[in-house]
Length: 313
Ligand code: SF4
Image (cartoon, rainbow, N blue to C red; front, side, top):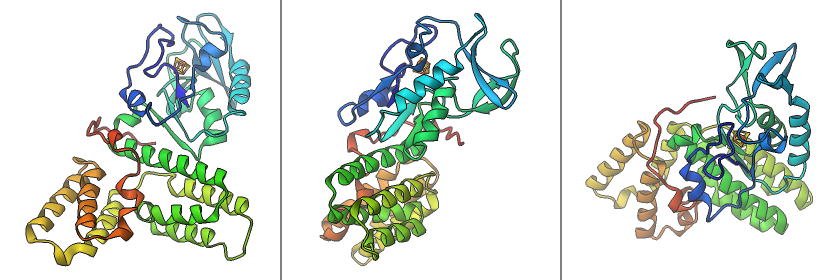
């Protein structure tokens, strides 16, 4: 699901569109469901801006120029729209929007005040997070950071694969998925790999639907936060260890320099995984070659572009 003003349509309050290349790059692989919540609640284009305003414990969505309160309209729309959003794997939302921003949106003390009180998700985004917070959810500002983008794409494409497995209903496919994602899960933390392994082993012989629901919830939680560079590097070194006897000193040095560049944020994970994959081919390590770590998302989406900011939260 996508905020419609990102790359697609000039539906912002001022009649503009936000250029965002990732949307075009994703198009061959992703079926977008674009939505502009402010247009959907009848605010039109162009329109006077709206803002979040504190009202006791509640947060309202109001249009200062007209005094209009669209809180209820937005809540009703969000509920109706999201209640039929089955089959969605992720959301790309417009940052800092009082409707779409998934976090850090200023809340004002009143409709006219210039002073922000606290920060929250926009009203529509808040409904997204309440219902679908375990999916891949990001805003376009954060997605300009390479590490955040790699994390988002890894989760998005993994959840799409999982959704297909859920539809197929075959335990063997779930076991294969767990095996393929072994190193990805290790990069996110060994405890996740182990707990998901126990679920998929299904010692209690539960029905597939039950096992799948538990596995999917556990997988979403495992990829709930950004992986640390250090755990990623541990995985790289673990894999390199399979081949170390056959590598020259120069190859080991090259691997070390790629890892250093990755650690400092100057190179994408794929620069290291490509090298490891080439060694797996050379040493015929078929048991490694099908690992999702080598292709967590389509290669065409690998990009050096990086805002370098890496905003968190
Ligand atoms: S941020 Fe959301 S509500 Fe605002 S123009 Fe974009 S899609 Fe519409």
